[in-house]
Each structure stands twice: as C-alpha cells, then as structure tokens.
Amino acid sequence: MLGILARTMVRAGMVKPSGLVKPVSVTRIAGRYLAHQEGLPKLPVPPLQQTCERYLTALTPIVDPEELNHTRQLLEEFQKPGGVGDRLQKGLEQRAKKMENWLSDWWLQTAYLDYRMPVVIHSSPGVVLPRTEFSDRQGQMSETLPVEYLGGKSLCMNQYYQVLSSCRIPGTKRDNVVNYALDKRPPTHITVVHNFQFFVLDVYNSDGTPLTVDQIYIQLEKIWNSSLQSNKEPIGILTSNHRNSWGKAYNNLIKDKTNKESVRAIQKSIFTVCLDAPMPRASDDMYRTRAGVQMLHGGGSRWNSGNRWFDKTLQFIIGEDGTCGLIYEHAPAEGPPIVSLIDHVVEYMKSSEMVRTPMVPLRMPQKLRFNITPEIKKDIEEAKQNMNIMVHDLDMKVSVFSHFGKDFPKSQKMSPDAFIQVALQLAYYRIYKRCCPTYESASLRMFRLGRTDTIRSTSIDSAKFVKAMDDPARHNTEKVALLDKAVKAHRAYTDMAIRGQAIDRHLLGLKLQAIEDLAALPEIFMDTSYAVAMHFNLSTSQVPAKTDCVMCFGPVVPDGYGVCYNPMDAHINFAVSAFNSCQDTNATRLAQALEDAMLDMKTLLEQTPKAKL
Image 1 (spheres, helix red, strand yellow):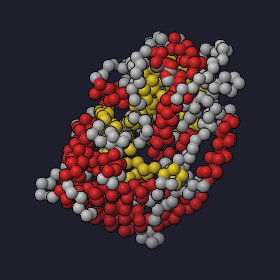
Image 2: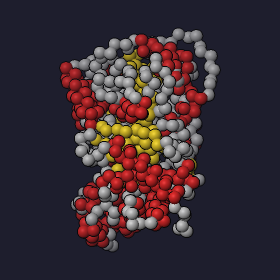
Image 3: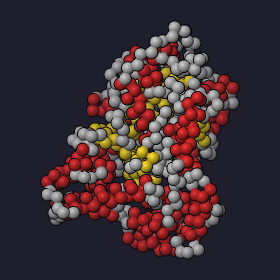
Image 4: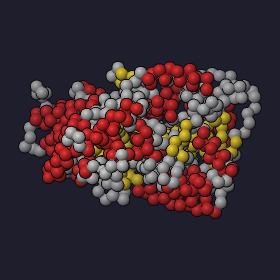
C-alpha cells in the first residue's frame, strides 16, 4: 500500500512544484487568478418581493393551509414599503456594495465556525474511492489550475486555494480557519499518522525539488516501521469531540510547548495521510457501506477514529486492507473542488513517470511528540466515549444502482439530477405519506467567492406527481405529464439558484442583517412555517465525478436523512445515512425505496406513449 500512496502523491502534483504548494508558482498563478476573480460578477441580492413570493410557493407542499395563510399575512406586513423587510433589504444592498461577497463571511461563520456539534458525521463529508487491490503494506504505501466553466460562464476558483495547508482551529465559543498556503514560505511537509502516531514528512529536498516516488516510499516505510506499537494514546480523537469541549481541551493541550509545536506542525502541513489498520472483514455487498463509515468516522476508538486529525482540511485515508478514500473539513470548501482533486489524482495514477532517484540519504521523518497529562488523558477518554456513541448511532447504506445511469434520463430529454431528486421525493412519500422539506446544494461559484444556496426539491409539481404516481384512478399519460412537469420545475429552480436568485441565503441574510442592526427579529423568522421549512428531513447533494467514487455525510436533523450521489453514465453511486436513535428513519429502507422509485419511473416512461406535452 505504501508504494501506491507514494506514487499518488507525486503524480497528483501534490508534491511537485504546483501553484498550490510552491511559492514561485503561487505568485505567477496569483496574478492570473486575481485577474480571473475580479472578472467574476458579485453575488446579487434578490428583490424582496420575489423572495417572499417564492418562499410562499416553496412552503405550499410542506405546511398546512392554515399555517400558510398566517405566513402569507406576515409576509404582506414584512414587505410593505418603508416596513421592516424594506429596511433590512436596503441594509443588505448596502452590504453588497461594500463587500466582495455579502454572504461568504456570514455563511462561513453561521454554517460552520459557529456550529458547535462535532465535525465528525455532522459536518465533514467522507469520500469512498474504488477499492484498491492490495492487502499488505507495500501496496498501501505506493500509489496550474485551469479555470472551470458552467454553461459557458467561468466559475470562482477560490475554494481550490483553501484546501491545502489549511486547518480549522477550535474555540470555546467559535472556531476559525488558518491557511498557510500563501505564506512567504509555504509549508513543504505533509503529516502521516499510523497507529495514532503523527510524523512530519518533508516532501521536498533542500534544493526545492520534490521527492520522487521511491524516496517517498522509503520515508513512508521508515514511518511504518517506527510506529508498530498500537498501544499509544489516540491524541487525534480529541478533534472529534463537541467543539466547545475540544476548544477547552485544545487550550489545555497547547499550554505545553512540545504539544503546541506538534499541533502546529499538523495544522501547517499540506495535508494529512492516515495509514489505517485493517477493519473487520465485510461481505462484498457490505464492503462499500463499511468503507463509507470508515471514511466518515474511522469505526470508533477501537479501530481508526484516533488515526485522524478531524480539523485538518484534507485527510487521505489508506487502509491496509485496500480501503481508500478521504475526509475533508467542510468550512473552507464544498464537494466539487475536492472531487476535482480526486479526479486529478486518479488520472495521474494512470500515467507512468520514470524519475531517477537521487542517491542522497534522507533524514528520518520527525515523530511528533505529545506530553499527556492526567487531564489530557481524561479529555481523550471523554472524546472516545462520545465518538463511540456517534459511531453506534450512524445508520449508513452505500449502494450502486446498476440498472441505469445518466444515460436513461438523458434519453428522455430529462435532467439526470432532476430525475433522481423527483425519485427521492417519490421514495420518501411512499414511506411517510407526506412531502418533507428537502435541501439540495446548488453552487454559487458563478459569483466571486460564491459557496452554495439551496435547491428546494419539494415543489408543488413534485407533490402532485408523487401523489398521483400510485393512484390507480390516474392514467399513465397523466402521470408522465406530471413527472415531466416535476422534473422541469426542479430544473428551473436549479437554474434560478445558481444565478443567485434562490430564497434560502437571501432569507438568512435578512435575518442576520436584523441581528446585526440589533433590531427585534422579524416575525417571519419566529413563525412555525419558517421552523418547518428549515427542518430538512432530506439533506441531499449531487457530487458528480469522473472517478467511480461516492461522497457520504450524515443527516442534518435527528429524524432526517443524508443522501449523496454520483451519477455515472450507466450506474449511480448512492450513500444514504440516518440515525439509529430515530425510530422512524432507516437508511436501507430509504435506499431500497429510492431504487424502486427510479425503476418505476423508468417503466412508466417506457410503457407510456409520449403525449404532446
């Protein structure tokens, strides 16, 4: 495994003088990058009346008529000329004039840094890569950004520059993120963790040239051989705890000079590589699910949960048993830049590159030392217990839908993403006999420093379709027409969202503007409808990749699901999560209902002559 890892790192441009790592190229790229960034439009503030109307439309399928009426009255009051909404809207518009992006700072704070739940499961996504065929350590160790476009429009590349040499720092009330990539002397090392022991591995020679595959392999082997004891304190598990508890433990941990230097070395490193011990064997049909949980949380304190630094933005995970993937801390970046990095790595691994290895002997990679006081030991024990509770509570199902992929919806002139989202609506409705608030992330990277907005997949049209689908009194032609309408409605909402005209971030902005103005919180934000609308029983994301991988994340509410998918040409990779502590949810049941819904929709379309829609 070490050979593959070494090859991966060199070929991926992670340890060659790429613009992401080396200072020379950073300045060269920085000029071009800044010119590109300045050419991007600023995120607009949508018109107030438009958002209020669209909010009511989005509420229609998920709240009862009486509640909807009450909200309609509140919204009429809210948007009166010279009223509360009008004042907040003007405040937002002023903010948008002054700032590069009126939302990005607020979003980073409210969605991530102020969020106090553990990053594990609740925030950090994991990615399962295709299984690598090796079962020994030899296999375990050896394996400038072009601007991206969407529909002809260039996208913001800022997130790519936040992924390497960055780390989240815990606080007792709020966290922050540090990024060392643009320092005058950017970091030239990665950290490697094996059997809970951390090492600094310099990936550049003293003359600035990157280490070759063979050199990295030799260094990894040295790390491996000097960390065979598996009885060490899993210091990394501290990073999995509730953020306030970890913030407190962190302040205590870094009082010691040695500990502070070790922690700083991890934070500054380009990324972390976790060399994992083998997990209990799983049957072939359970393998992907087990790999998914290994990427998300490491399996608990008995297995690999201590073999991580969960605050690190990027951690590659290489299991001795061939399980490969990564986990990333969500604050600096969304899924697509991470997946682009994966595609880049996998593509590079296909090419063979012969580089003569210099005969210079390399220094032993430095082992990071930690002084464990009784108090730190107590914090580790608490983190272990909390981690094991989370591990037992996560209900996960990773599956491959092998009947068709993007190819079928495309043959029906339907958006594959919209088709999958409508199928998800049908699956949920069949189980619960109701429509629920659904979140799908939409990229705002068409705008400078854009992150995401929400595609609300539950629409009036999707509700009409899911209610009609299993109704024997409805004709198939009518069902097809309703399906077509539901898919088109989803496509329209998606287009609206990526153009900065969705409702969720605008509503958040109005709410935060009120808080900033020290004004009373407007009634629309204390309304039952608002609480219902923000309780996303389905939190979903399409993360397409060229690589046959799948991303996974936990639900965002106790009685909800997390659903992530990667639609390939002829199959679709799905990851569905829920919590065991909720009696009403079951990941396997939803995954099965989703598969049935997809097949039923395909059959409906194939058996029904296309009417003139």
